[in-house]
Figure (tube, one colour):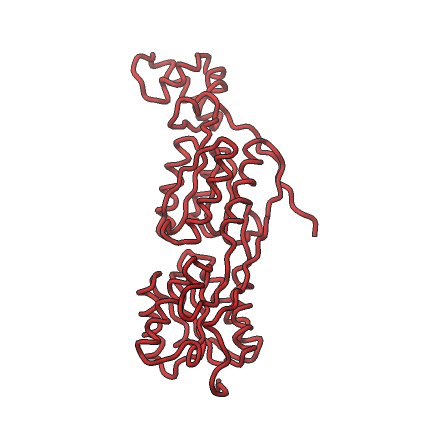
Length: 347
């Protein structure tokens, strides 16, 4: 299948265009759009009418008013404390800095209204590009980005329509499920973080369920737990799982922090990892190899995603064509927290 190439964006109207249409100077346009006094009512009306006719959106900075070049790029992530997002922002910023751009980042807290609010704030202040996470956003967000005429790239998942740098979340989680089945596990559970408005988390659970079904197994409802993120959430999730009847012999967790919490709770209840319970995390956090036992996990190449997202936006901001979709597959990292079940496992 040939790569889909995105052509450079058409130029958005700038203050000069508004000034020409209204028959005034760019300085007058700037004063009107900044709400300054000392502009005649007829000129003010002409500027506002011209701006509306042209679809011009005022930016917060004077430089952006005249050139639409703010030399800053925005990024909105769901959880700025998540190690994967810290890594992607760091590598994204590295690429931007090399090209002379500054990064302005915001946290949305897995809330689409908050994401829209933060993104709108960045757009109105004249950022030249925007990085988002995932493919689920507020219905108004992409229309607002289009009105501002700037490039956008989505990360950590793949999109059929929009520019993106990411991986197949369902496939990566299915790989983990198949590995556990190959070890001999038949009762496999999931402890995930929040799935609402989170296409990555939802796709991973779907991938696990479909992989189990293809092997003649099922993800039992009592073994499918959704909790808040963090180590405490992992402990609580495994506690809930144990209350639902016979425990699974293996679990796949939405993050390494959740996996760590589940391991702590398992040990508190006298269960051996991996003898009684195999555990797989997600992200390959810095601490994962140093847990006891070292954590088997799905490695997300967050730094590479950040670099590729930066390269994508820089190319588009500089008017160069670029591939729409860049896929950077996740990788299953095998360590000591997974093993065959001690006894043949019933379904």
